Amino acid sequence: MTLSELYVTLLIGGAVLLASIVAARTAHRVGLPSLLLFLAVGVVAGEDGLGLEFDDAQLAQALGTAALGLILVEGGLSTRWEDVRRQLAPASVLATVGVALSVVVTAAGAHFLLGMDWQLALLLGAIVSSTDAAAVFAVLRALPMPKKLRGLVEAESGFNDAPTIILVTVFSTATADLPGPGFLVLNLLYQLGVGGALGVLAGWLGAAALRHIALPATGLYPLATVGFGIIAFAAAGAVHASGIIAAYLSGLVLGNSKLPHRAATRSFAEGVGWLAQIGLFVMLGLLVDPSELPSAILPALVVGSVLLLAARPLSVVLCLLPFRIPWRKQAFISWAGLRGAVPIVLTTFPIVAGIDGARDVLNIVFVLVVLFTLVQGPALPIVARRLGLVRSGALRELQVETAPLDVLDADLLTVTVPDGSRLQGVAVFELRLPPPTVVTLIVREGTTLVPDPDTVLRAGDELLLITTPLTREATERRLRAIGRRGKLARWLDEQGSPRISDG
Image 1: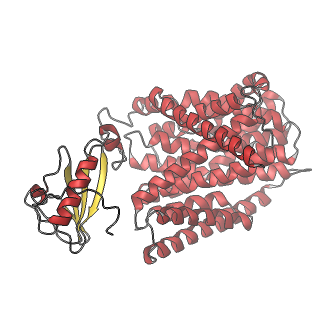
Image 2: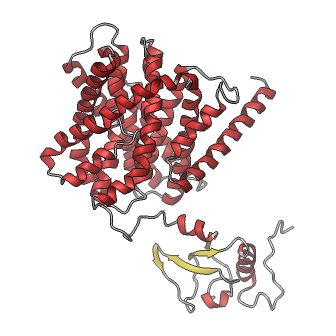
Image 3: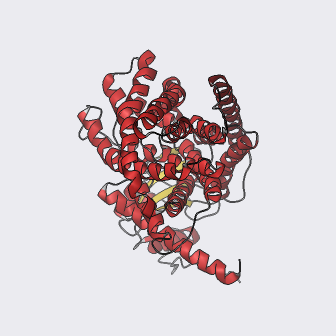
């Protein structure tokens, strides 16, 4: 690649990224799942749109699998252990036995209703049987619903990718007779067992290392945290275990450990997850040929209806029988089986393996994901309310460190009082910060306190201030002025201007 080609590639990539971000904002405002508009960006940019050519299924498989690893690391980092720990048993059954039941019922529907041969039907059933972690996390965390129910659905979506990928891989590489149940069970146990162990080990080692090693810059902590998740993903894949389950469990362990700079780490991981989702969906949109999609609409409706109305409810009811979960929650879990990135990525496996009819499977799955996401995603809050699982006006869980500041167009500043600073001994009211700037919290010797106007600052205090973009510079200048000359800084003609050099 020449330098000129690099510039053109970066220009196109940057434009697609910004278009996808605008699409995400638009989707949020109109209540549509973001993945639909990301796919649309890819289709518009493709060969039948703006002319970008991309038909390398093997590259799509490699990049898509890597993106799934990043998405699952971020999902684990943002999942609270206390919400899922009591739901591990039912979630594990749904992610294994439930997936197997869903595959069989969906494959039977594709075989008898569409006339597919059994290998292709089983492939299609396995591909669409996995719920999408990113879609589930995004929708459920915006609903004020019981923690146990949300934890169960989130845990299932984090766990069931691995069994699905195993089944798709086995069915794609079976050139003669399909493997027997014994082989599938042993393969599943190995991949989940070894992958899970490597994920927990990488997360534990990463948490221990990050707690005891002082890195030279704050920004290195998020990089190191995500790096441990990537190591878990790659290590499991290298020994032919499940990298997906390793990525999710490593993120789960790291996200629930007492790590330094946790808020920054989660924000960084969220950004990485969004970048992976955008790149993944745009790439998959480029991979499909829009002219081939109309013929896939009817098969997609048939398979999707079997999945939504028969396979998913049957697997949920049978798997949750031992756990005595109320029928209303079972109905919600059945409807909450959202599909997204994983099924479309999995369609590249049979294409790369050279399975006859694999391209038709790609088109069917693509149309199925789009149509049924349009139906299930926006309807999920309505279904939850109709089933009595959410209450009008109930407290919603917020990303507290970002959501209110975004609404107010405010900035959060942190200031540490160093030794020798004239800020020591100054009361909060004596700071006389420009309104509406306010000191909201002081971290002192590992504990937090809410200051009152008479609270006196000490060396080592970390102040959290909320200000606005219009007053931020004046606030910084005032704090620097007091730090240099004390509370009488203005009388001493100290304006707090930044010092470029002391020389």
